[in-house]
Length: 396
Image 1 (tube, rainbow, N blue to C red):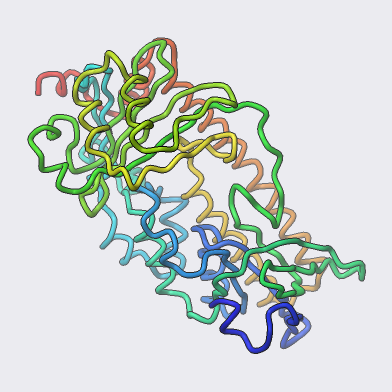
Image 2 (cartoon, helix red, strand yellow; image 1 turned 90 degrees about the vertical axis):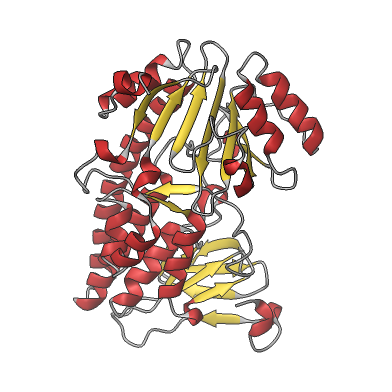
């Protein structure tokens, strides 16, 4: 819902979300990613009203972006199960998507992990396209609960002892909330994050069209399921690729460099730069670069994002959204006062912070495996520890 859908001029609007009762807090969720959508859905499914504000103008604004997400049983999948979406996830996810292959720059697979290596569903990590997951969540949420085209501009604590906040949006709307759930990601306005002083990696991502997976020239390097990743010793280069449910191949070009290091923005110049960057690699890598869609190349600098793409941000965001939704829903159901609600939220925040430290360390370790001096050996060892059979793979 955009500002034009509201009555009156946006700049003249000031809304105080008045509670129906003293125990019903006014809850505003900022950001329509997995965390925000799950938090909203968890509250609504338990009879607690809340409103989500999303800066994008519609659900289709960035539907072309995003690759695959692997959701674990106790994090992302639990968030869906607790909200009645287990069947939708099972229908739209792919167990075969968790297949992993590790290669050197020659393109020869050194280790592989398939769905057969994970017989226990609680250990499996089925893949689902990000856009599909978002559609599942949006379909389950009443349309009026999401305000599209509302970019948060500022947050001001009220000095009335209630702990409430005044939220001002870029379209002029002002809202007062008892609880603010910040789920607006890397460039958060709800809770600004410190910026790192150094960069660990920069990526350029581009999809290859579905037809490229059927092309004889790329069949050896791009199979229509799971992930494949290639790296080489002492190069600072890492090239993962994954196939989406539509058959498109998402290719990521990662490299380590100083903060001022940047790839060209013009597509042809970028293609040349990537070819030079991967000089000496087998032809498969250069074929994939040539097949990428020039109109769909996206740059991502890790200096502007707090979580590396080897981490667990999406599935843990969904789990965090579930947890905060459950705590606030219980507070409303039991009629807790402000102090009791604050205490319960503080306990949850402490627990989630400790979990975040664990996942942050995991993410950091994963990226060091990818860029190790003796790569790809550390990645192969890590995959073997997860159950892959390298000897069997080398015979195929």
